[in-house]
Image (cartoon, rainbow over all chains, first blue to last red; front, side, top):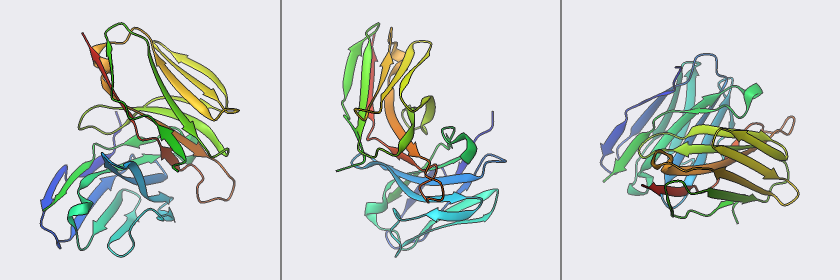
Length: 114
Length: 116
């Protein structure tokens, strides 16, 4: 089965450090999402790419978060500097816009900022 | 107020019970309605999707959409312990030319436990 691959699976870092999370979408998918999940807020959309172009990053704190797709096989989410309130599970999902319901999620990166 | 509201539960039922999970929404532009299932420490996986109003059945699962009431439901018949998970509703709108095209908006998720 094709899958979305996220690395690392777990990350513990100190406040103020830079964190980079990576996502390899399913080959051929043209839409990539980054979501953050916490118990309090549930799944929050951070950024959304179509054909590698950012469409919507309104949910992302601009001063410390950035998202990019340097090529079709890699999406990155960076936090600099990290803060304890960034502790959450970050999910990447990919899909085809023509099959809008068929988004596949990765297993997530569990981030803990101490 | 959130665009999609879902009772977080938790919901605990005995094996074999019928489970009803629900979401309400405020954005009348939503056209596609989905249910995702998420097991502990895993990513959400698509369970069912429905376009516009109506019912859809897949084995023990039935999804219903009532656009006039802005209300969607997922029914699980003969629930099993393996159905214990968090169930998330999700919706999307497809407005031509809009940046929200295909963007999924999720409910909070309902934690379901089916005990033997």
